[in-house]
Length: 296
Length: 154
Image (cartoon, rainbow over all chains, first blue to last red; front, side, top):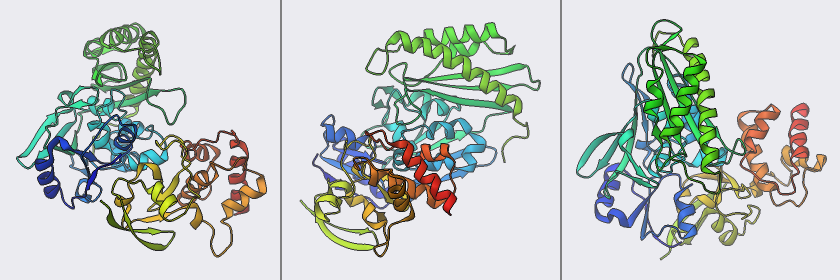
């Protein structure tokens, strides 16, 4: 592992450097993925650009009724401990608290989790459920990309060689909502998900009729993804066991898991069904408990 | 090419010339001869290299030394003060919570960070704080006991 180290002091300086170096400079946020890849020789870099000095990308900011803005460099432990995140996106707090263990959560960042583009990224399902928007910055300017369009495949995103992920914006969902993220591993910590499933349920007035259900999955396809056909089964329905069974079945059909060291394809398909059923029931319970006053 | 890096370790300032790609763990062990932090997996899996960076536990093998400039680094060598062991260390000795000892420095640093923010943790909280540290002698029970004995003593 040998490289030149770039340590810009501002985002503007970082973007100028990235314009010059393009793919020759790899971005270092927390380092929990990048340094492992570099040490293993799975990745080579002429230069590594550490963003550690860009405190301007380390913030969690409530934007009132619009939503929450999260800087790309916020650590998993700061996401998990944030009152704002716990209140507004409890499933995101849950997901970040399940990344590695304390040492990894203190180093790893939300932006790094997304840009690393692992199919198993824990932060992705909750953000997919919330239709998060990502601000990609370059010396040419900024653009906003829906998280649904961000991932292209394992370790591949739409980031251009001169771009840096700057901010994750989580729009405020409307009405009463409950959400959860369930991660399956052999143990509760230090795991890459065998399967991850997040579910969000929106209730419309009554405690019974679901106005919308959203399902997101990780570790079951080349990218984290939504199970849109499984979601549609609940639209404007009262949740019943048969519907939960059917949605879990359809969600598994939408996945395309592989067999690898962590699990076989067949096991993953079974576990999607199990986690899906559990997550729907938990999200429903949370939605029913959610007071309708909205966010402040 | 080497670059100048100033590190603050256990309250002391070190001015070093190091290659920019070296990890904090390697610099601690090889440049400063602070070999208490252990190199187990060198990939962030085992926790044997755990040090506190601005008070928070991190894997020193996943931090580039040059990026730790101007931050407070605490290693196992800084846990005892004026020749007196930290209460956690005392408790480990008293409970016999050490077998081969390789994981011990990392585990003590994880637990020190826990106790700094949560002086009376539950068993579950102790387990969560230690989840990133592997003990291949599997001697966890006595470590839990050691922390719990400390709570009662305090």
